[in-house]
Length: 75
Image (cartoon, rainbow, N blue to C red; front, side):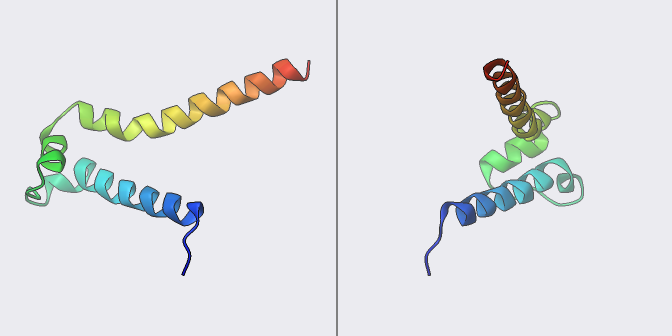
């Protein structure tokens, strides 16, 4: 069975969603995981939101710049 880049992106996106959901939402109700990096993010009160929101903000930045570049090229 051959994996293409779409499968890899989908898998990484799902893994990021699961880890971010644990760190942001479920860490209040569940005990610490024992994984140092996840526990540090789970106990943080400020920067854990930065790591979650940098993905959509980065995507917005790329799309807005691409649209602006298209307007510039076609004017």
